Image (cartoon, rainbow, N blue to C red):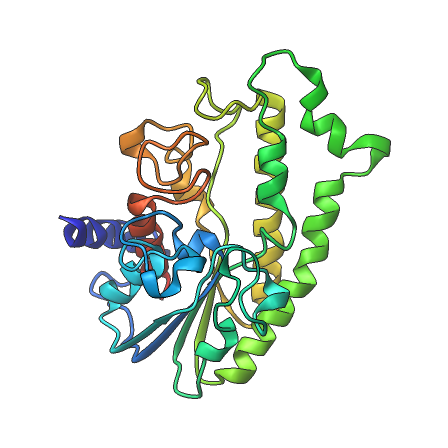
Length: 285
């Protein structure tokens, strides 16, 4: 069932690409390395990789494993790790992945495909999102828009813009270590629909929800700019994931809310999201 769904999603995603020939298939890749943070790793999504337990990495249902299966790659190394930041790829795993092997070490001269999702931890967005939870309607002490734009400066926007240099540096280093690889970097998906959720699964006010998603979208725009500057392929996960956000019905969600219904960390992709995002990436290859 899972492979069938992935194939259907891939076909649908590919069909939307302008100028795509009907009989086109992705190129044959022999050595695929997945890098990134928890969006790629799949924390709490079954089945978790015991050998990389501190990274909270899904063996088979994160988008890297789903993509590897879709492409039929011969060699696949998943170095993604929850808590990762772009500027720390040369260090032993930061954050949740403390003690994990540096992500750059997974790259070799034979690597011909690299995927990457990174930047949210550099900008501190996950912590900021949690800080915007407001379970008491009308509680203005937790109003994010006012708090983060005090004095006329958007603090979150500034952090997002500052993270761009780290993302660009990571793309350059990947290209240096894997000179023959096609490098694919993704945006993050749509976490919150316009106006936010209407239930308590994600208690964030409408104004704050729009502000937070706009900040995530801003990060996606910075990622796209760095991809262009460094000759990488950018895959925008936002358009397709609208309607599959944390506010969607459980059966439709690709990203879980604060109170998940599926096995996944709050505000992270579930298994269905891993399949869908893998299909979107496969369609772009």
